[in-house]
Length: 285
Ligand SMILES: C[S@@+](CC[C@H](N)C(=O)[O-])C[C@H]1O[C@@H](n2cnc3c(N)ncnc32)[C@H](O)[C@@H]1O
Picture 1 (spheres, protein in one colour):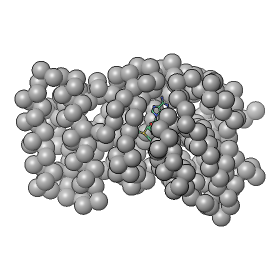
Picture 2: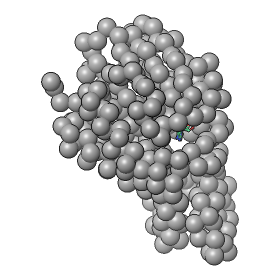
Picture 3: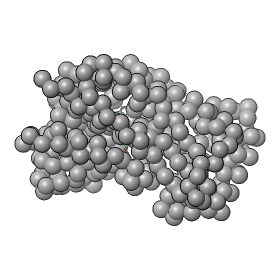
Picture 4: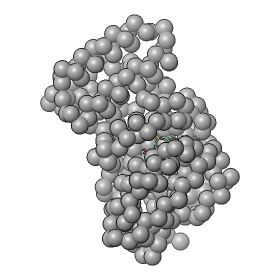
């Protein structure tokens, strides 16, 4: 899916941005906004910010003056983020944005300012258990809230023209290979893939955070012109991941791929990809 280890291209991030915005939890953002209400200004650190999709979604929905720090190891993506950032908060106050190119491997070496909110979208599945433990240690020390959006949960299935799940053993086999592929090392230790969000929720609860989760799947209905390119890219990426994990099953994988592309091209099927959004609020002092 336009992904090489921990590197993603701008085309893929732009393709997913409208589907992300449609899927993301509004109610968790409102809850975070309410928690932030007393502050004159707030510092928000966006980890793995990419080309700024998380900033564009949240900046215009949160109230109050915002100072964002975007971190990513891809300076070109950050450059796009800086040039396409919202200039106003929900109540018309200033949103200022700084970008820093750096590796998230060791948060301590990034010398981050103490944030009111630590956020990331579509990042956690790349991270290991050790990395998530490090993240939670920092959040507990800072007593910052955390909003982690669009974390894959391992669910991926086709739907028919009425939106009903198509149950297929072949799809389940392909999904298992895809999820195995997600659990390879992607630069931040051995990735947890779809388990990351559960590991994060447990670790946060253990140190006293209140954790809220909401299901935020991508829906690509059959024949929806706004989601057809995304659906095709998803099925192509799914094939590629399966071939890398199960190279001995190339014939099965290519037959599956051809059939599913026919479904999409004839508007016979759509696709659902499961995600979870997670909000963590620190315990009162
Ligand atoms: C799936 S993209 C999500 C980007 C963005 N948050 C969004 O929602 O569009 C994951 C991002 O994490 C960044 N990333 C992955 N591993 C990283 C690392 N070790 N250090 C810094 N950034 C990393 C990638 O460059 C990419 O921009």
